[in-house]
Amino acid sequence: MQKLVGVLLVNLGTPDSPQVPDVRKYLKEFLLDERVIDIPALSRNLLVRGIIAPFRAPKSAKSYKAIWTNEGSPLLVNSMKQAEKLTEALGSGYAVELAMRYQQPSIEDGLNALFKKNCTEIIVLPLFPQYASASNGSVIQKVMEIVSKRQAIPKITFASNFHDHPLYIKAFSEIASKHQPQNYDHVLFSFHGLPERQILKAAEGNNCLTDNCCNTLHNRNCLCYRAQCFNTARLIAAQLNLPESAYTVCFQSRLGKTPWVKPYTNEIIEKLAKEGKKNVLVFSPAFVADCLETVFEISVEYHEEFREKGGEKIQLVESLNDHPIFIECLVDIITK
Image (cartoon, rainbow, N blue to C red):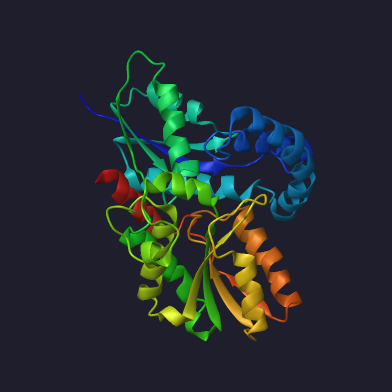
């Protein structure tokens, strides 16, 4: 019997369109996830349905309209290209489906497509390099919920994270090299932020959220999001021969007033401008496909903030998208 291995690539998600109703719908599904806003259900519902979604949707819709292309949402378009290139690279014996944790194409539809192809094994690969409960953990939980309702369950494995995979590091380094990082006044590694409480929940008594903890990766913090982010930055910096003094690790996309992991990207940008730095190169290694957080939040919003404070240019290091080395990385993760 010829075995067919199914591969489910999962990214975060995107609205169906940049119109306010679709953005509101997306925000509700995303933010009502108990792993994303991890507070009691009643409070979460009141907060999301009554405050965040109604008031944030119009602003977010304007941002999405600014980056929407003729093909659609950049995140979905780039993710589809990744799935196509991966299908070609894996060849026969593999079936690849793309899913989004929120909105379309759904995880359930992706799994059903693989079930219909009679896959003997399914590999679920969340496209989030650094592990977080709100991203990787949410995908894993959703898959398990769907699969648990089936009578016949094939072998299912999960790729937890790939923050230190040599080909992931190499791909980002190669893309960055064309910008000649050594010619910039400073380099930022800006990762997506998380509430501090989520990091502490996963710490299980470790001395978390301190430089002494996050500056080295060890058995006790090997699944700590912040520690993995710092490790990714160190590895890319080493590949590019950047000294420690030439770069800063920071965190973007903060939502609400509760403490999130620090330092905050916007505060670091303001600090660099006050120090007289004029040109800053910014990586966003938590995203493997260009999306709202890279092409708008960094390239537009942070660039404008930096110029207002006296800087000149924020240059984004483009995401991995369908770069050949990143596709090679995905193949290596799947076939090992």
